[in-house]
Length: 337
Ligand code: PHE
Image (cartoon, rainbow, N blue to C red; front, top):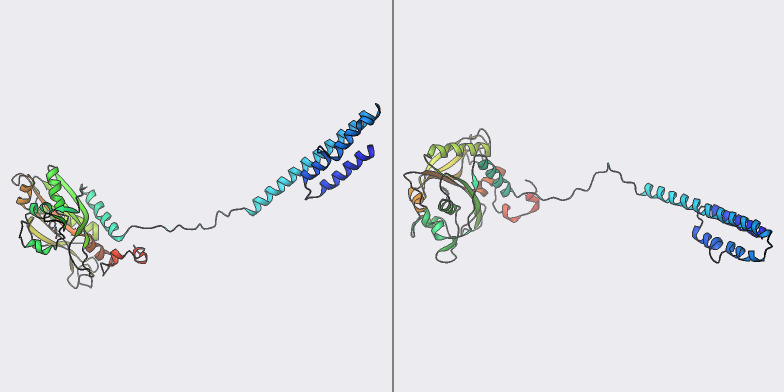
């Protein structure tokens, strides 16, 4: 029996010495319920009273030795596995990452935001109005009665006899004055619609930004000063502006406003078609009839309004020569801004 135990110890130790020993299988083979060591212990009953404690002690030693060796091997294997994992799964944090494809703002949105920022900086608030509008707000309240020739210049999409797609952002002026008492200082960017054929400079849907200031003692000088400030911030510090007499039914007097060409500084180039000046907006003092239509007393208050095309400014600023590029949404075009 002693020999058997020694042989078991030796065999088990030899097997455990191998680096790829199956520890669980060795445990079952020697220490398991049907294992070899267990079989020896079962036979202990046949021993004499003197032999039993000696063999018992030896058997316990053998078991303890095998268990300790299995545990030691197990730890070694776990350490080796961890080492291997660390080696193969190492991450080089200095490697450049994979850049996610990110979108960007549309050039029209960039310019609109730039305009908004400038006017917000001058104390303006943003007002919005509906794109499906009443004839009253788009025309009548703006001093453009039925059969007025000015209606023909804005080829309007009618939905019913008195509902239309707004052809300008000016109806927002009326909506704001109806709701809010002066002082008023708002801008109103948004979509407008005109039944124009699509070409390099026309689209049935485009964007305007309206501005309206109403208070006591507002003059054309205020309009001019404020637009000059806007032009300098929008197109550069050297930019000058000039007013040319014009006519709008809802302003009196009215003007078209040019900025000195920001490409050539006014010398004349392709962008300004040799003129040195570029027209960017329409403006004027709010017509007394319009104030009255909104229950604002023209004896007490005066105001100015202006309106400009966001496409036009965008095309000038970024030297875009075809308006259709702004709507086709080709990412190769859009990614340049
Ligand atoms: N609504 C005018 C247009 O579409 C622009 C404008 C707005 C002119 C406000 C004067 C005052 O042409």
